[in-house]
Image (cartoon, rainbow, N blue to C red; front, side, top):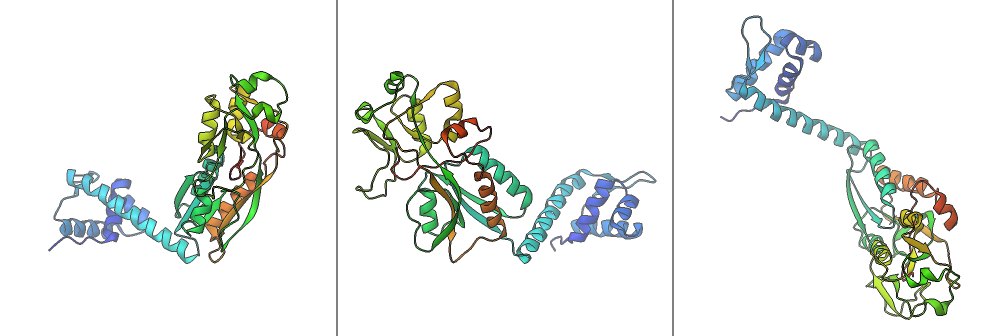
Amino acid sequence: MLPNPTLDQLQVFVAVAETGSFSAAARHLHRAQSVISYTIGNLEAQLQLTLLERSGSRQPVLTEAGRAILEDARRMLADLDALRARSKTLTEGLEGEVKLAVSVMVPDAILVNVLRSFQQGFPTVRLRLSVGNPFLVSRLLAQRAVDVGIGGSMEMPAEGITGERIGVSFLTPVAAAGHGLAKLGRRLSVSDVRDEIQIVVSDSTAPSDSRDFNVFSRRTWRVSDMATKKQLIVGGLGWGGVPVAMMRDELASGLLVRLDVDAYETVDYPIFACWPAASPPGPAAKWLVDQFGATLAQCPTSVSDALRLDDDVMFRAPAGAG
């Protein structure tokens, strides 16, 4: 017959191994020493192994088999603790898992800090995180593939999606320090930028006649996400609007230069946390919404303010933004 040790036997065995004696394990578990000794004997009989060497008055010593079984016992007890904790959270109404989508427009520092606090506050809640271009959040919400979306495109939300405004973003036009526009060193007219390549973030699934915003060049390169746009601009391949939070270091070092373009509108764009109206966020997901909101409440209201900030803030661009 296959061995069938009980969880109680494993718990007693681990206690003896960790405390170093039957008497110490008895005190730790609030049991009689005779019960501890009897339980270990039954466990060894079940496994048909000698787990502890007992000789005279010496403290019990783990055998080679005992050391191997100890690892398995600890793992099984840890799994049991996790099961109990998850059962408790489900009983209390906490989600077993939160599916979260975040735009690449959220600076890494904000994302990591929020999720670090989430891990500490909700250790039993699993997280399924999707991070992608500014249009990914809207798509995943429309497909009901996530519980909460932070950021996303400027498109109208899909039917059945609701949310709340948690921040604001804006772009400022830049070019690499060696780019021709940066070298002009003056306010730029539309005619100055007309024949220069402008890097634009756009959604490949959007209608071809959808309106662009702040796009003035006849020549455009279109990319799917802001991170790629920034890298192309840093590489001197074009100019365009980039969130200050994504390029503070490059601006400070002189790698990128702000452009003063006549017709370029620095407009505030609202940032929303969204979710399916029929499935409002549970406690853990609502905490994420509130935490992102609290962080984004520190967003600056001007480019100059953003450049003076020490901490990263989140910015996002609209569809077809230049």
